[in-house]
Amino acid sequence: MAKRLRVRSLIATIILGFGCLALLGCSENKKENKPEAAAEKKAETKAEPKPEPKEEAKEIVFDPRTPPPGYTTCHRNHCHKEGGGVASYKQVMAEIGATKIVGAPKMAPMPKAPSDVAAVPSDAETTASGLATRMLKPGDGTTKPGPNSIVTVHYTGWTSAGKGFDSSISRGRPATLPISKALPGWAEGIQLMSVGEERRMWIPQNLAFNGKPNRPTGMLVFDVELIGVR
Image (cartoon, rainbow, N blue to C red; front, side, top):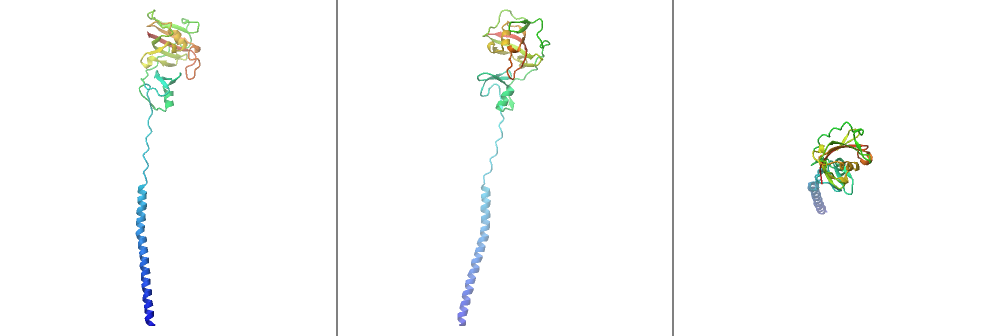
């Protein structure tokens, strides 16, 4: 009987020993797994893609020598639209979102307005249309443009309040244009001139821009020098 009890006690001891070993093994496995899990987590964190650097906004530059889409030519501080109409350089820049302009010649100061821009003087000649002109310097007296001529001129335009709005002189180069594309009063007045002549014109509103938006209103006064005709 005593022998049987000793055998049972030995078996219980062996079983208890194996249980402790199993528990120790599990504990060790847990301890070993913790660094592995941390390493895996760290590796996952490193593997996250870095955000791509943002591209800097590209500056939009307006060059009148290369008109933007929708425009045919740009000169004399404005651009001609396809199908008709014009827009100033400032308006074109706003339309295309440009913040810089290149290739445009620097403007010289606008010539000072003459003293008689406010009203037509008594020594001016007035045509049936209401256009008034006065010769400032005679030309050759023979070479005159017609309605289909292309003329080269120097000119400056003022409002009757004396504000200058356009000048080939301030741009530093003469303008070449077809008479058929000019203001009605300007086209009529230039045909009264001969090459070399300078003339002042008082153009009533109905022969000028006639109330068009974003254009000078009222009577306009032009000094024009006729340089060439073709």
